Image 1 (cartoon, protein in one colour):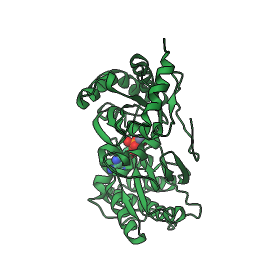
Image 2 (image 1 turned 60 degrees about the vertical axis):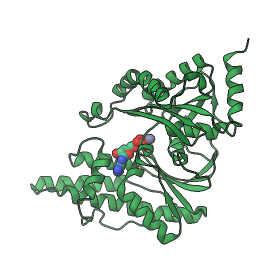
Image 3 (image 1 turned 45 degrees about the vertical axis):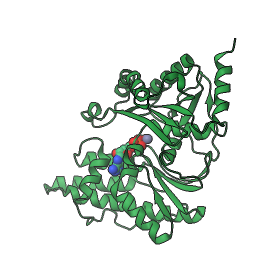
Image 4 (image 1 turned 120 degrees about the vertical axis):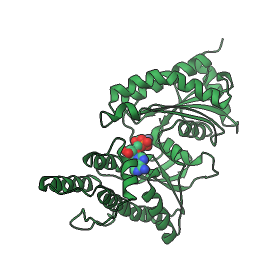
Length: 359
Ligand code: KG4
Ligand code: ZN
């Protein structure tokens, strides 16, 4: 009789020659419980996301333990819904893919345990996916995009410029020295009294305001090492707001949102343009929650036009945390024989970004 491991290895190897492989993706790294079925790495058959925004709103941010508990409650239904929506039976699947890092450890463990149980019960290979690589892969969904390209990943935990030379090889061109861009957006929202999640609210108000406030005393330029930093800008906003409040003066919320967005994104766009030159690529691909930001999209499109590169980004539902991107990433790993995990796979709250990362 064949063992689970033997069957999983066989089915995993078969994916490389199966253009229409069906992969169930599971994502639970933060406050979205998600499951999806993707065919052949590009065709989204279902993409179910249960957001916990309403639950965490009253705390002003994600409470890790609360997130884990809610993942536990939601995930079985979300998986059933993803299969039902796709019209796919568990036995039709070729693999189960799961985010194993980076993220909140307790939250990741819920998705990981469910994925392992599902894989074992159905004799399916388990594919371990890096959350950030999945965000980049979201750009393959419903498109014909192929590497090489440069990807700008901007989420709540990461701000990175990656040179994606092939489906499974990349090098880091730049990252943030301190806060992530999404984190800075959320902090600015908080000091302005805007509800969680802050980024989309700052984005909305920025469109109604003018970028007429000088937040930095001295203008900042692109660093020679292309590194980014958002902690100073965040602090400048906090100080600006506190000073007005202490003086009893009104706080021009929309103008602050616009000024912060322009300051943060103009420099990011200039840095991205330098990174494109350095890597010698002609396509810049946006990824992560902040890739939904309207000014970021607009500014990068303009920068692309001026500098002769094309800018692409996924639709907003694929920028936010979702499981379709996880299944997609797994397909392109499996196509090159990468990513098969054992049932002893553990969750990792932090994953380093190194060239040619392997498990
Ligand atoms: O990728 P994501 O959904 O989760 C992480 O992996 O972190 O990104 C969430 C981050 C949050 O910081 C959120 O405020 C930010 O993305 N975000 C935005 C926008 N939409 C989401 N930031 C600025 N403008 C937006 N429209
Ligand atoms: Zn994310």
